[in-house]
Image 1: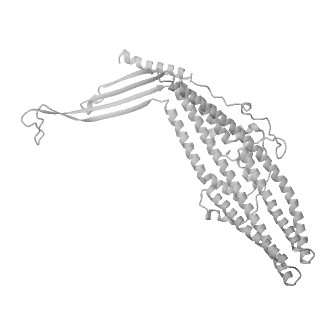
Image 2: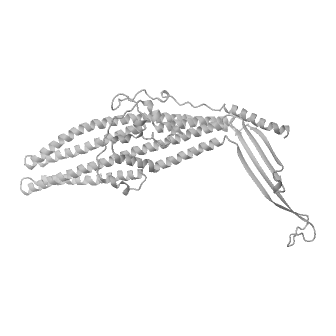
Image 3: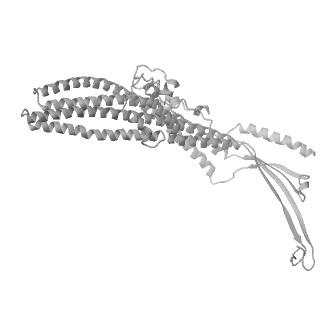
Length: 494
């Protein structure tokens, strides 16, 4: 080994060490997550929690919040949706894409090595005519020669991350991966909320159908009584026609309720990744509207920065945009690369590796003039980062709005449920009295019709208020970011 050859490994080590030291000075700003004050997050919500005070919200409270509704059928449907929903499948595929993008970015730190090899036989002839006989010999004299040649070669290149272009690219890819994970969590959270909504609407339609059919039976009896009184000369045809109209009105409401029920069941089937029809056959058996087992702890507004996956996705998008400023700025500075090659050539395959040649070179390049393109890219990326910050802040404020609206809806539904329960009790008593008094001929049919219409409306309103309470709870848990905390691979653990 020559003196020069002995120095090559030391030169490589020196260049590599210097490159690593320089790469620590990455171009562009270092990302710092914005504080709650910069995002306009208040210290407390504008209205009191539904249960008073501001109890903290834990991941355990949010993870499987629908189990608090004590409905095994609903819990089973949600498990099926998490496993089979096609929107979730698409989000999982996008997450895998982002993971591969990070692997590609990390691969840029390593040398790139390419190899090639050739082999063949060459022919040469000294005959001017170049004509050969059937045996391959020149016609009319001359000589021919066949020779073999073999070669093998490997080329390597390594871009040194002098000013952090590669490290900032990898930083952006890591942020994009986390954002994709939070996007998956948000899709999962949204699907759960939509499934709960359609399930509750299906049970509400079944309850309203039950009320309509019971009312239909009562009104059919009223019509028969009015018709009998007309035949007996105890009442005019006005009573009979009013009873007939009232019964027809109730009959007309049933197909609409059945269509509403079918629409909810069909949506549930699709949300669980199945075709409408057989998938929800078991749900066609009527069941009561779910009831809430506990109040909802809302915590403080700053919790949304941690709990909401869409907010965290927006924050990671801001981190990625900030890192790409460094990528753009690093392109303004010199780039350093190391290239090397090694190869061999021989006329005999057996002697191919007897003589090996190679070299190693360093190269530095710098853009001298590009018409301002690179600096424009830096300004463009800074503008993109400003937009990402605005989007992050908007997602935070939107999350706070959702929580406030959820608390208002839950409070409203609970107060209305209490009042409608009173209305139902009073209307039921009034209808019972009116029916007995009409049968006794003490009141006219209009009074009976009014009392029974009031009862029908009260029963439907009470059922709607009960479903609105559950829907408000689902809305509030969705606003708080519940339903993704038990994901197998959480974005913050990747």
